[in-house]
Image 1: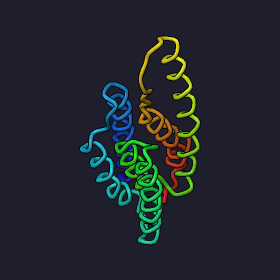
Image 2: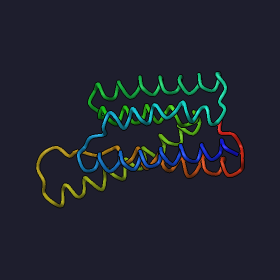
Image 3: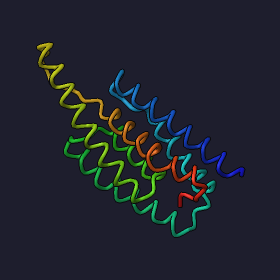
Length: 162
């Protein structure tokens, strides 16, 4: 019974960190390195609480590496910010590979809506200059969506998440 309680606590901590990332990105257009590092460093505790095998941990690391390579390329062409790359890479350590696809899908949809909304706001206010989109909001919303839609039902059914 101790492991599910620990899993809930760790996922709650991740949810709080995601909300904080969204708030700071909205306010300052920056996601702090210490926050991304804390998210990444919490993942091995979650793996342990879930009793993941070495093979499952290997898959988590492989998906994380693949995500980092793709996201770093997007950063290199200035299509994504550095904090966003680090946040998504840290999240890849937590999210099951199949559920990471859910996260990316929801993130793309939320990011599109966010971009449209902020673009409309930018135009109606007749602001000049380049529009800056706090994409950390879309990443955080997608992460929270996956926690609520995928992780909570699995925990409530008593199954391991690995």
